[in-house]
Length: 538
Image 1 (cartoon, rainbow, N blue to C red):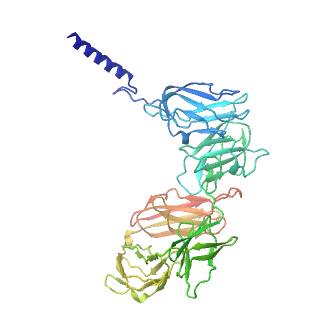
Image 2: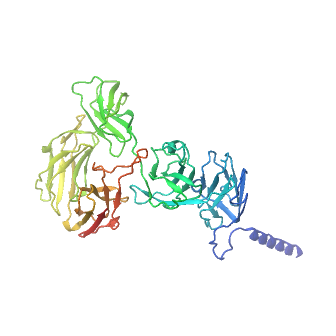
Image 3: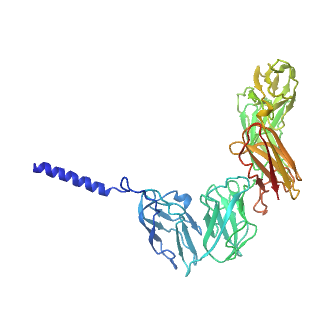
């Protein structure tokens, strides 16, 4: 009996000890909503004449570091990043091992952002910083401001903001080659704040970087800047927001390659302007070629009638560039002709019926194309070739509540390779006029500027529905609109080229202003609904 009693007592003791060793809050207790507290550090916070290689920061409870690589900003930046531990396991201590040689008479800020969290409930110690100085005092000046984007309504998060001291060594090219004197980050807001700054003049730059190396890479990064330098302590608040934009890269031809037999593709970088491809090889008398730019891609497609040859020589030119190249011809298979007719089912009044193909269509036999209404009566139409894409528009008068059948019989279309289509037939119908809405916009163009008024739709409001150009106060009407969400955007076209132009850092050129109508942003337009709004452009 005594043995049984001892076994039971031993089991209860082990269970009690195990329960006491369990971390976290007891079941049923109140939820911990308090952030961890900074207790002390070695060396202390705001230490001057700092000369240590290791820093230990202590907290009142176990903490973890979340997204440290994204959250931590060290200002001024270090050439060799420090080692910070622990990562991945809870601890009451954060250890910073400094590997870099520190600058003299400099205040350093380790801004952990929102990386420090308690282990149990992930409560965040917001904007936690550790500060020290290698000099005899801590710099204490501040400045703050906001970020916006030239195009996007939703401002990008985690934008790096950089300060460069204006001295004899400063040049505009410094942002491509050398890290700044100070860095901060917007994290998950549109606001930024610098602390512990020295007195002096600074140039401000914002970068939305693919890789946070604090150097401007025009191919991948967005940039924003203020033309005027700031003077501290005077400019503690930056009134003007910094606008981010993506520069257009200089044109550069990349390569040419064979995609399939009779089709080549020429890739380039930057904005192409008057780019031309000319074959310089000896070709047969019946040689034909067609070139078209790939939509939304930096490439030019080149179709040609094949002949016996191992390669083709070309010269690629535009206004200021010329290059020669040779493309090897090895493909043996040629793609067959593929044709698609759209739209299908519903033909909205703003829609155009298009015949799209994978090869350039060279001949159309309209006698083999039949368009009839619901009473099988022939509908007159005309055809129009697209200059930019491999498609042909069929233009005809649409009637409300009508049904149409379009049939393309064999050999109605013939491509560059003399391939012809098989029979294609599609049906589509129109709706009643009452099924559509209308937006009337009274634009007050106070300065009589050249304006591009755009109506956008789509999940990201990136589909252009209609564009109108005006240069005075007037009424802009968008009619026969499908019931869906729309956004109204106005571009102030300063250089009068009828398109939006981005900025350029070295030229100190800002992007053209874009204004969004506050009430007509992602606005849901209903059927048979007529909306009238005013848009003041100043």
